[in-house]
Amino acid sequence: MDDQAAPPSPDSVDPARPLEQARALDPARYIGAQALGFDQREILARNWQVVAPASALASPGDHVVREIGGAPILLVRSGEGVLNGFLNICRHRAGPLALCDGKGAKRLRCAYHGWAYDLDGQLRTAPEMQTAEGFDVSGIALERIEVEVWGGMVFARIGSGPAFADVMAGMDEIVGPDQLDGLRHHHSRLYDVACNWKVYVDNYLEGYHLPFVHPDLTQVVSYPDYTTELARHWSLQRSPIDAETDAYAAGEALYFFIYPNTMLNILPGRMQTNRVVPDGPDRCRVEFDFYYAPGNTDRADADDAFSDSVQEEDRLICEHVQKGLASGAYQPGRLSPAQEAGVWHWQNLLREAYANSG
Image 1 (cartoon, rainbow, N blue to C red):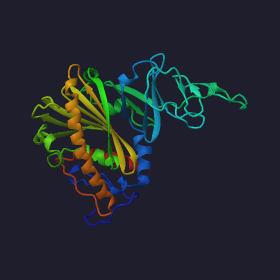
Image 2 (cartoon, rainbow, N blue to C red):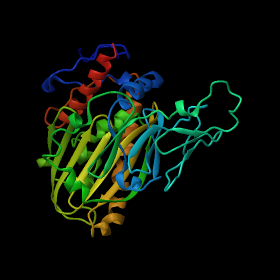
Image 3 (spheres, rainbow, N blue to C red):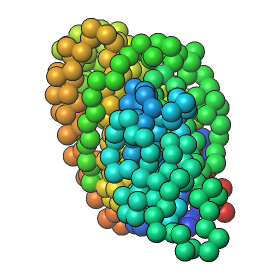
C-alpha cells in the first residue's frame, strides 16, 4: 500500500507485516456500529479480562455486576464457597438479577418479575406461573460464563477462546500471583474517554508519546531505558523509576497488557488494573482498581491525583486521534520499530481476529 492509497474499508485486506515494515491498523476498524459490533462479539466476549478484585467476592452471597462484550454479567460466591459467573439475564424476559454490587445475598431475584434463583443459578421460584403448561423450575437455570482467579483478581469471559493458562503463560516468571496476592484492593475509579476503545489501548501500548504528552510522568520513568517484551497473548513495557515521588516508589515499573483490554500496572508496593470497556463506537470507559501492599496506602491520595493528571492528558490526545481517524483523511502510517512493538503486536492480534471471521 503506498501513501496515496484510498482509505480502506471495513472489508479490506489489512495484512500483518514484519515490525520493520509495519503500518497502523485500518482506520475503518475504529468507526461505526458495525466495527464495534464485531469487536464486542468476536474479540471482547471471547477473551479473558479482569473484571473485579477477588476480595469483593470473599463471602457467600457477595456479588458484582459488570459487562463483557456488551452483555451484562454477574459474579457471585455460593454458599459452598464456589465462585460462579452468569449472564445477568433472567431466563424469563431478560430482566437483571442484580442491579449493583452487593454483599451476603441469599438468592438472586430478578428485578423485573421476581423470578428467584439460588446462588448456583438454579431457578427456585417463579411467581404466577402455576397455569403455564409443562413449566418446571428444575429445568431452568442462569447461563454460566467462565471465571478464573489469579493474583487476587477475578478474570472472566463469555465465549470460547484460548485457555486461561495459555493466556497467562510466562507471566508467573516475571511477577507471580503469590507476589500479587500480598496486595490488597483499596479503591476504584472510572474514567470516560470520547474515543473508540482501541484508540485507548493503542495509546497505552507505547511510551513513544511520553515526552510529548506526559511531561510529569517522563520525569519519573526512564524513557531512554523503556523496553517492550512480547508473548503470545500479552506484552510488557518495562521502565526503571528514576525518581521517588509521593505516588511512585523507586524501583521498576511493569506495564502488562493482556489481550484484548486488560492492563496491569505493577510498581513497588502497589498495582493498578485497568479494563477498557466500549460505551459506543466512539466512547469508552476505563475501570481502574488500585491495590496496595499493607502499610503502603498512604500513597493513595497522591496516586489518585497523579492518575487523574495522566488520564486527562491521555483523554485529550485520544479524543483528538479519534477525530483524525474518523475524518476520512487519514491513511495508516508507519510504526516505529523501536517504540511501537507493543502496538504492532496487539494490532496483529486484532488482524488475526478479523481474518478468522471469514
